[in-house]
Image (cartoon, rainbow, N blue to C red; front, side):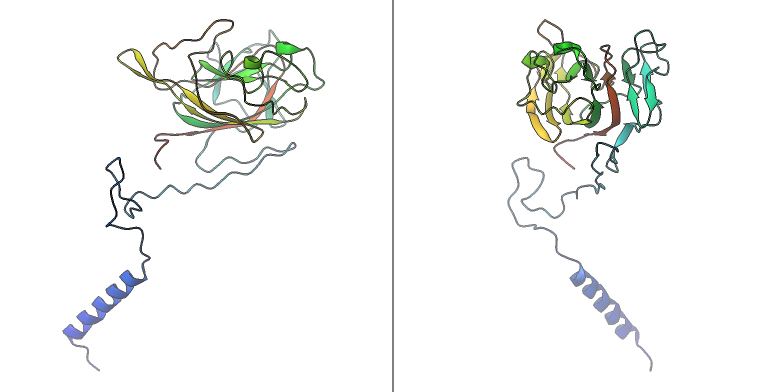
Length: 273
C-alpha cells in the first residue's frame, strides 16, 4: 500500500501532537506577577532547582559522605587543601580519618587556613574534644572556626564545663551566646552545620552585616544571627571593609582538638536555585 505525501505529513503531525500531549503540564502562564517582577505565581518557566545527591549521616565511628556538589576541604587523608601560617603544608597530625592540633613547637604547627577563599557558604565541620578532659573554662578543648579568617564560631568542650556564655561552644565568640548548650561528652564527635552570609560593603562602608545560622549536633543555636563585627578578645568587634571572599581558618589554642569531614557548598545566590 502506497502512502501519499499528505498522509505522511498528517501522520507526523499526529505524532507531534501526541508527544506534546504526553508531556506533563508545568505551572501556569496566566497568574499574577510576584512582587520582584521576574516570575508569575506558579510560573512553569522559572528555572528548576539543581539536582543534588544528599550526603550520608556520620556516626561516632565513621564520617558520613558530603553532598554531591560539596567542596571537600578535608576527607581524612591529607591536608592538601590547607596551609600553615608560613604558607607551607601544615604540621598537624593526620591519622585514622581525622586531623589533630599538634603540640606546641611542632614545625608548621599553629593555625591553618584553606588555600581557597569563600564568600556565602554552607559549611559542615565535625570536631572532637580531648578525652579525658583536661583543664576548665576556656582552657578545655579550645579551638575555633573562623569564617573569612575573621569571624569565629567557637569550638570548646562545654560538657559540664561552665564558661562565659559568649565564649562557649557554638557561640559567635565575644558576641552571641548560643540559644542552648548541645555539647556531647569529651571524646565524642560533635557536628556543626552552618550557613554563613558574608557582610556587604559599599563605598568603604558597611551595607549589610554578616549573619550565621548554626546547628550543633542537629540543634539550632543561631537563626540568621547578625554579627556586630570581626571577632576580638575582650573588646567589641567592628567592621572594616574587606573583599567578598576569605579563607576558612582553624585555630590552634594549644589543645589537641581533632577535626574530620569538613566541606562547604558555595551559595552563589542563596535566595535562588
